[in-house]
Image (cartoon, rainbow, N blue to C red; front, side):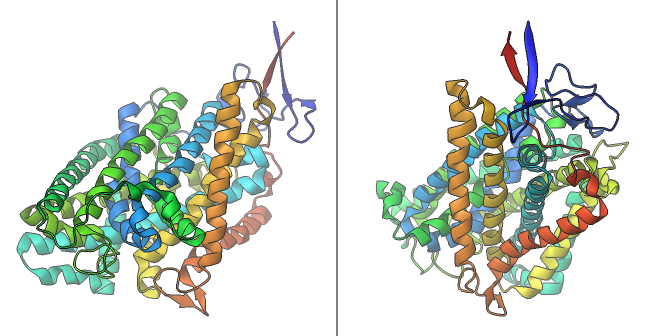
Length: 537
């Protein structure tokens, strides 16, 4: 026989958890929850069993969008760390995989589409949880606008290559046309996402497969050009590229980390669909770590090949050439791939379009979860009866991301670079918060086994501390307009205003929400608690 108890998160005193839905009996042990609940988690009406492991991994890779992430980030990252590009990408992967372990632990205990919002609430209480959800939403809104912007650039580049008219590529510089095209891409992504994960899955298989295939062709052709000596910018391979000790300063390291962290971001979409997968928590957890490892291998191969053929100089196709940095593959595709360059344009276009659509799943389901637990207006918790998707939340996420891009395109001279740098702040914030939430939530079981010590204490804390340091350093550096494109308002860098400003806005919105809907903040819908402890008699 065993006796099941839970402990108050502050005092450790045994308590009986209050109900989640009013009037329902709830106990923290998973075998004694009220029907439809688990550790205070309740179903939201999403259609379950739609995705298997492969489908979730494909969805994760699509959300990461390797071609888009690399073409957007390689230039700014080279500016920060130079030849140590492979080193910073590997170092940035370490906190990512450590945080992924934290996600797996939390998801195994309390699988919920709210992810950071739900878990931070259960660990630290509703106010911290709400801000965690806000950070996740802000990151997704930023990246959705950025994805749409890259899709616009490559759409017109593809038309120029298709019709042999270089002037068509210049149409992306027409701001009204650029914004209108961007909104069209967002509208298409919203339409596909609204139709649910089954439609999403069918779209993703073909687009992700094509993207990875073209990147493989690029790697082979880049290495071939570098070896043949017919590219004046080419440089020889060196193992020194993998040595982080050669990064000259901590400021450069932090800037490089903030950018490199961005390229791994997106795998957590695997966890936001955990209520809709076959096998639930197990499938989603495995998919998250599998996605992160697969993406690392692809990135290192592409980065090494790109450096060898282009070098890091400022001439020609060099990665430090200011004309190339906002869109590396647009500059390298023709010199490296010749007549096949149109495939790279299609790969980045399909990658950004598919990521735009798959990434839409994350903010939509976060909005759904926050509304479900009373942290947002109830309209956001509506689920399409036909498609089993968070329809209203999906539409709102699309409207906000499209509007954000339109405003940023007018304000910033280099909207893509500035939003990527600001996105790094958002990622560090809510990933780090999730890592610390894991350790605090499981604090009573940290030393009950060697596994728990590593998976619930050591790995999450290391990952969280690294991300917290990068966040702080980037926030300080980004105050200067020189950090990013040079765009500023009242002497303050636009990157700081976007990143830190959005977090500050979150506190304002939270205060309004607390005034309008105090129930969530009083613990009436989702309370702060700790897992049950099973104590042998």
